[in-house]
Image 1 (cartoon, rainbow, N blue to C red):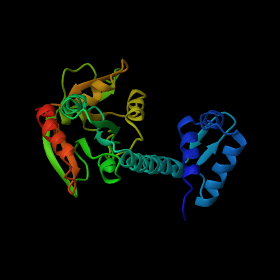
Image 2 (cartoon, helix red, strand yellow; image 1 turned 180 degrees about the vertical axis):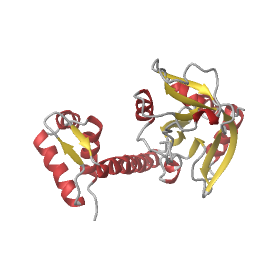
Image 3 (cartoon, helix red, strand yellow; image 1 turned 30 degrees about the vertical axis):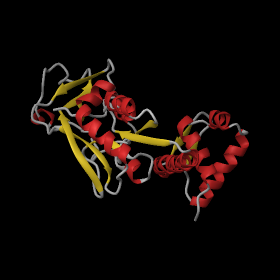
Image 4 (tube, rainbow, N blue to C red; image 1 turned 45 degrees about the horizontal axis):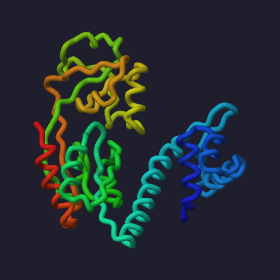
Length: 269
C-alpha cells in the first residue's frame, strides 16, 4: 500500500494542533475536506488514528506511532527536494543534526568564516533515534549523544558531561545537594527503556506532574530549566558521551573541513 503524502501532511497538522479547525486553517483547506481526508487515511490503514470528542482530538496508540513515522517521512522528502534544487542551482549546503541540549553554533560560525560559499542548516535529532537524520539524508553530520546506532557511521569522540536527576521541586529528595544512584532505588524512572516520550517537553511535563524522575545530561536539564523542577548531581551515574558522526561513505571536502573545525571547537570534558 502506498501512502499519500498529502494525507500524511494533513494528519501531522491535526496531530500537532489536536484540533481540526486550527489544522484546516494552517493548511488553507475547509474543515470538512480535512475530516474526509483523515477518515480516508484511517480506512486505508484499517485502524483508528484519532479519538474525536466535541472538545478535543487525541491520538490513539497507532496515531502516536504514525505521527512519529510521518514526521521523519515528510522531513526526508523535504530534504530530498531541497537537495535536487540545490544541485540545479549550484548551491553547496551542509546540514548538521544535533541532540537535545547540545549546541553546535560555535562550530558552524567557525566553519562559515572559512567557507562563506557553503550554506549551513541545522536539524534537531529526536533523542530515541538520533542517527535517523544521517541515514535518511536530512543531515550530513551529527553532533550526538550516546546511545545511538553507530553501525555504518564514522564517529569521533568529543567529550562527556555528567547526568543529573530531574525531579519535581516538591519531591522529598529535592532539597539535597547531590545524590547517588542508591538514593534513587525505588523511584519511578522515566528514562528511555521504561517509557518513551515523544519529546523532552513531554518528559519534563510528566516529571513536573509527579509521574517520576529522569536522569538526563546536565546540558539538557539546563536547556529546559523551569521553576517547578530541580536537577541534582548524581555522583556515581555514568556520564553522557558526545560524538560527531557521519555516514561512513561520505568524503566531501566541506564535510571533512567541518569535522576538523568541530572537533577542535566542540571538544569538552
